[in-house]
Length: 434
Image 1 (tube, one colour):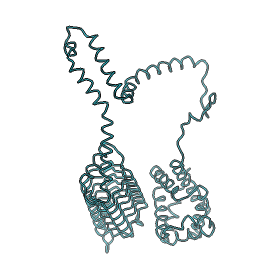
Image 2 (cartoon, rainbow, N blue to C red):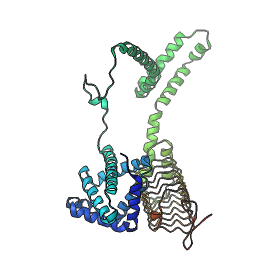
Image 3 (cartoon, rainbow, N blue to C red):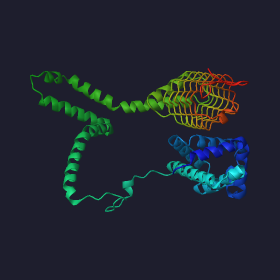
Image 4 (cartoon, one colour):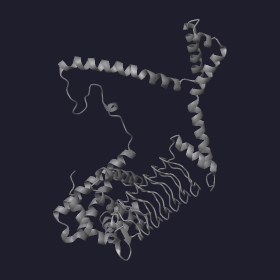
């Protein structure tokens, strides 16, 4: 759907000076017109809810010109709303209340063109969020499994009769090529599936077969005549065969160490176990180590999605390219940490110490950085759209090229910071060119 981005941006800029009042009015309009949705918010801190709505609106408007990035964020938002109890039927009332609130605040500027622009935008946003909600709540079913014998798929191209023999010949050749190509893979897959005793018997049989077929005077025959060689071959085969089991056992032991250290502040064994698991490509999603001391831990590219790392000491840690979306890092210590290119979208980093941390090119969309210490942090080219920066200390931070608006930065402490446009911030003098 084509959106009138320029008109959407212009109209939203007129709302920004009254943004806080706008979000409060939205919920008042929503509850007044649709009281059936109010129970969804009975246990919600509405002050935080107002901030979340405002951050979401800013995020959407600022990324209208980046549909790919915005699509991924809306997918995540849709998935999150499933856990809040939101159902597709609630999207209509929310949209109606949103348009009513826009009309209320724009007044004469609420023209038919502006209304149509926001209606189209909300429809596109809703469709993307519902897509995200469907992906998390519905099992994926292969298309072919739903087809009945004799049925053709929609828009399936028709093959002409004279083309069939040629196509069949080509298909037959391709099938044989596929069969021969897959033989080594199938043999390997069979090797890992077979029980160890059968693999040992097969290895012994192959050894005897090679021995019988070898020339009596050949070097191969002389080598195979030794009984020790047979034992060595079988032992080697079994060693290879049991490698996955040993690796699995190692993983169980590593997780046992991590579980045993729960509630323990300092555990070097836990630190090593986490590093070993990550090095083996094991997901650390949902890791629960609040208050732990994990100084200088090396977890590049780790999957720490939805992990609970609150009050954890991760000073000078290497978390570059790590996935920390929806993670709880509130009140944690990340000073000097390497979070370059890390995904921290929707994470909780309130009151976190990120001084001198490397957050270059990091994804900080909709992250909570309320009262976080980011003094001297490298935020070059980071994405901060929709982030909560209220009371955040960005003194001396490098924000050059960062995707964040002046509106979002207005609630942060910026003395001496390098702003997105490359200029230095001065509280009394405004911007100063470097």
